Image 1 (tube, rainbow, N blue to C red):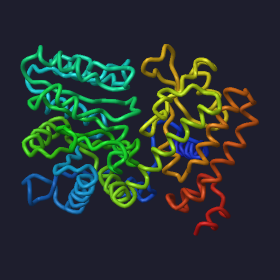
Image 2 (image 1 turned 60 degrees about the horizontal axis):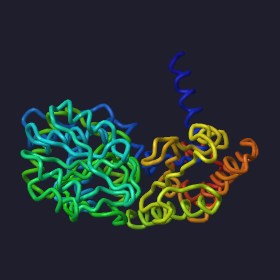
Image 3 (image 1 turned 45 degrees about the vertical axis):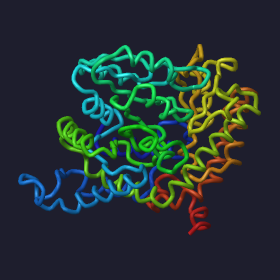
Image 4 (image 1 turned 90 degrees about the vertical axis):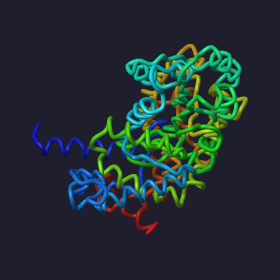
Amino acid sequence: MNITDIVGHLARFDAQSSQRLHLVASENGMPDQALTPYVTDALTRYCFGTSADTHWAWPGRDVLADLEAHAQACIGTLLGARFVNLKPVSGLSAMTVAVSALSGSAGTVFSLAEADGGHGSTPFVARRFGLHWQPLPVDPHSWGVDAEVLARRARCLSGPMLIYLDSFMALFPHDLAAIRAAVGEHARIHYDGSHTLGLIAGGRFQQPLAEGADSLGGSVHKTWPGPVGKGVLATNDPQLAGEIDLHAAGWISHHHPADVVALAISATWMSEKAPAYAAHVVANARRLAAALTGAGFTVCAAERGGTGSHQVWVDIAPVCPAATAARLLYEAGMVVNAIDIPYLPAPGLRLGVQEATFLGFDQSGMDDIAALTARVLIHRESTATVAPAVTALRDRYRPAAEHLVSDELAQRRGWRAESRTRTS
């Protein structure tokens, strides 16, 4: 395979993937302008500040440093944080820095077990740091942390304690006031908002730093429509901000200026659109949960409206195995992932509406998604029969999305010129 072959393969992937309806809870799009940094010199340069603040920084990076400062300011305003660190190069990178900076020597880290929707890397990293990891107690009926049990466990411990709230299966906000009351003022609470950061920024989930968390962080490519290669950490505590900066500098040398500039563009977009976008995401998710229930699917937490976030969990086992469901939907042009879901005996489907919402889907579109899903999985129509209907649905919202992409990108993806003309 030569370079031309590689580029051809990539172009085919882009054209095919852009035609599908993506409903994966951990992915999103970005404003088209946020792609620009990846074809500039920012992609291949370092930026360790400017010559004014460190004697060994390479000269000529002032513009990159200024753009990083702009991103920090925008994100700080959106998250209600005085201090923002953009060194992490992923959500996992942000988690590693946070655990390193907040846990203290030989302390205890509480986080959610995988079975309760926590991230599997958190206990791994905590133990590799020599920390004592314990699972947070959870009440399956409330879909949240059991604060009374946590209080009893916390009273049995001495020394530093970190509560790391790492819900990658996230339907509803945490009761941070109850968690703080359970562990006291001396414990550190870090809120990993990787999945819900865009909803937090838009004021449609919760405000962790105002509700009792010491720090907030995560990735910026889920409900926040930003670059995959970037994570953030934020706090209002100047001493803690210094610790985060110190540990981030120790763990991360090159924090990818092109990603930082893409995030600056995304953060500017969010500064203008976050409240409306976040409101539409949550409304669409709740509409999809209701429509799927009406179509005959079993939706988790249906008694609470199905969700308070971008995620909808479907207990698909009564219909077919989750892996089979994901394969059939993919054949019909819909991308979902089969995954272990808390408190279900078999894997289910975790759907996310944030990318479709970013592209302009409204609640009517959610009804159509549910109907198409039912045609494939309940009524067992041929995927070849349903696929054109999925394409038609995607094309219906194509004009709303086309302002996000350049003419060159639209041409490569095969988007129709006439639909672009209608919205120009």
